[in-house]
Length: 128
Image (tube, rainbow, N blue to C red; front, side, top):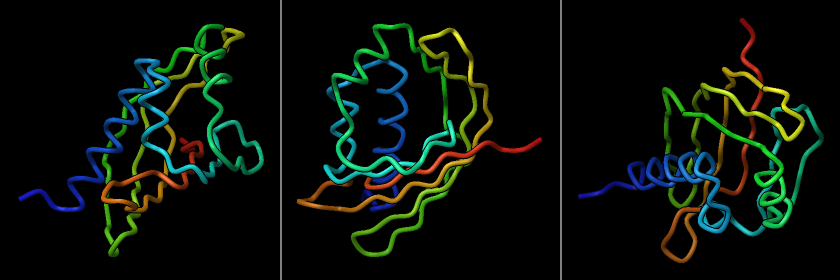
């Protein structure tokens, strides 16, 4: 029997894989429409649906993620899940600048209409 925690892990693993594969359409299916995010560039809170065209343009401009999650912990509270872990690897920007991990991350997912979706994500650098 598959547990909710296993389902949540599957969504998180899939999101990381699709991001690395530059599969914009399927990647966005992992996220709730009212998604919010604190990204690793220390920008302010980003709210709302991820812009597919903007993400596609980043990929076409040379952005290349090569990341993997590590030590993922999942805690499920009914139709809400809290995920914590670390991200290893790097993300090369369109300007060639390489953002190098590791980072720590926290994600919140909700279960709506029978499927888990990421509703919030927070990445921050992991100090040496």
